[in-house]
Length: 415
Ligand SMILES: Cc1cc2nc3c(=O)[nH]c(=O)nc-3n(C[C@H](O)[C@H](O)[C@H](O)COP(=O)(O)OP(=O)(O)OC[C@H]3O[C@@H](n4cnc5c(N)ncnc54)[C@H](O)[C@@H]3O)c2cc1C
Image (cartoon, rainbow, N blue to C red; front, side):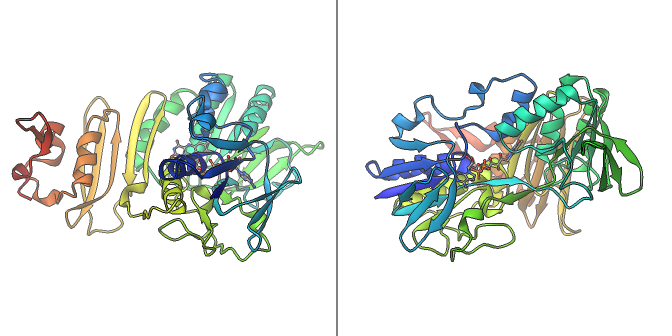
């Protein structure tokens, strides 16, 4: 059996490891546009100088030998022939597969703002090359603007804090990282960034880029007509899946990207997909899970995507850690919201409905994360918990048996 994997990030790497776990002898070839394996989530720490390139790597030093994987870096899939089960590569080679995993992720989306297509000094943040380019240009710039305040936008800002430049962030929503944070959790970060001099423009859109005679961006005009000085624009306004090489094939795509079922299978029985290329949820833990599910099914062991809490994110900006699960705001009045905050800035929020947790935010002190995970994992009906929710501690769930094994203490929770 020959498995070919396109992409060497969260989905590709975890798919490969899972294939190897299930099939110890099959041939695995990993092909990637990337030159080496690294985590995009910590690129900002490279930009800030906190990590070297080597310290971005998230696999073992001997990853390829350990898992017996053949590697082709700096090589791009440019076409696919599903009939002959063959991938055409940027180095003019063609490789055959028995099973193919498409884990090619996504690229930065540049919104159609006037002059965006011709402006110089406009960069997305998606890979190590983008980071290197941003670091170079940031040194020469005075006014840096980031467009989009999702995880990527806030990463960009935090990576540039020590460059001593004017930093501004423009966001159409009313807060930072609006998918994962509510207004309260966002405002904690906003205050911390503002103390470092960052300016925020919320509830507003970018309308036009003003350019100088060399075509370099000089100002960003907002939808209210005001202009922010800008000589480097970092665009973090969303992503589009990397599926160009599928053009002309019968592989099904939709608005989000590659269409897969809950087993990670595409409409071609020999081709699987996982990660940002599917557009299901462009965050690292989702990509990891999708990679594992696709890898397992490719190697013959059935696994299905069932986890409701795939949308778990953790972040740490300016020394303030936050964990976010599921929804950050109730969808309507039928949801119950439990809140707790203290004078030290620690914040806890749980959103539940019909006894089931649909979302949670922990900021500052994350020690409740264990309890929360347990509540979710054991599917505890939170309306039947006898103690106030935030007063439960981890020990309430377990007692030690005579054989020193932990076991769940169901009685205390009347379930
Ligand atoms: C700056 C930044 C910060 C982020 N921060 C967070 C965070 O804090 N928390 C979080 O959960 N998520 C974060 N994310 C999102 C997270 O990084 C992604 O969800 C995750 O990397 C997706 O993994 P993936 O394997 O699907 O694709 P990607 O990471 O996009 O990797 C795609 C791989 O495919 C390769 N490739 C692309 N096209 C081809 C081709 N045609 N042929 C061969 N290879 C190809 C690429 O080189 C790469 O190796 C961040 C993303 C960025 C960019």
